[in-house]
Amino acid sequence: MTEKRKDYSRAAGAAALGARLRRLSERLDRETAEIYVARGIRFEQRWFGVLNQIVLNGPMTVGDIAEALCITHVSVSQARRALESAG
Image (cartoon, rainbow, N blue to C red; front, top):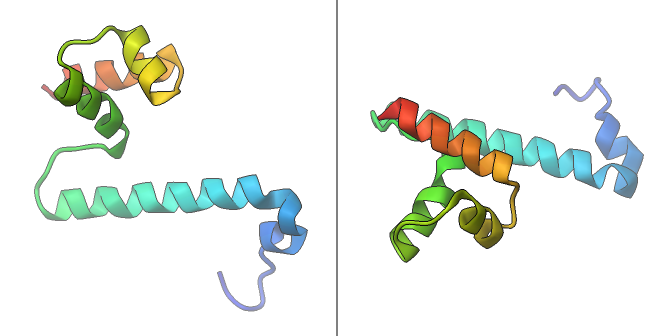
């Protein structure tokens, strides 16, 4: 963003903290994905938690993974489907 353009979330201060954190998270995910691509690694950051839980605990249900990661069943199911599609 240029100096001339006003950053809305910065101007809004603490009230926009959630928006700023989301932008930061999206930027980190995007830059991490670029690193994986540059290294020829087929991996999406959103898979990490699911895979890590399975490595640590062995086979788990979608519900168990969701509970361990404090995320929704839907998020785990989406990651599972993406992992299955990726092979």
